[in-house]
Length: 363
Image (cartoon, rainbow, N blue to C red):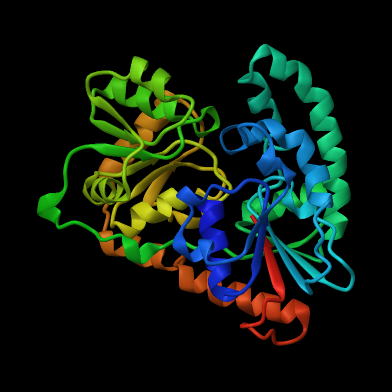
């Protein structure tokens, strides 16, 4: 249940009888609110090892999406950071695309993905990316209205698709987090998230190695073993942790370190909801959530030296936990539901009947 699934869960609250279509479905990791719905999969779900290796089937996803029969629906909502907007809605159905980002691996982060890939993948990426870019731009015309999860993503939509987008920030369950008492605070910094190269967890580890300061890293991913190898004695790599452990560490850390560029970035909002400040790279969604000098600080270059300088600046900052909690509350789930419902009503030009199964979300 990551950011995309949390958006789907909130959409399920707006449309409680909607059907859901997705490529791959693993009920063991999906919330009860989502499992209440009728869930249909494309043929990708029946391919070997699809639940574990679904990314390998990316070249087949455009064809799988275009085979879906959505003729029974008058409202289609695609939730995408991949190709899901490429469905073919039946006229006059309205198609709203909630875009977490145009596909990063073929657009703004193509070179980073290419450089970090193995030899075989690098051979295949250029022709595959060219095909997907052409298809991706073409399918933008199948969307009646784009909604972006941040101003950062709205700009990408404009750059790649030449389309305007309404900005509605994604839902964050801010009520799930509570600040600790001042006497409960501990002396470690915290990094949370998927441990993949574009999120730059190595920067945080190397910076705290050099400072000989305490850092706790929570998350799993392809870089987990590498980070454990390079971590010094003051850096603790915990791997994936249950939600209660995550909440505990959010509330008691000195600050969250967020060294990557994200489309929106739920993690900084969760840290602020826990009453803690954020040290973030000054690009992407974090610049729209963290308030410099009030709820955190930014660094402008992804380097060890810049992270160290930001830590030192944070230590000198006059920080009030109440400011962070108040800022995080602006991104609570109720706000997303209210704004998305209002936007959908506006663009469909009629007040929908919420209890009729006449809409579909595509995860």
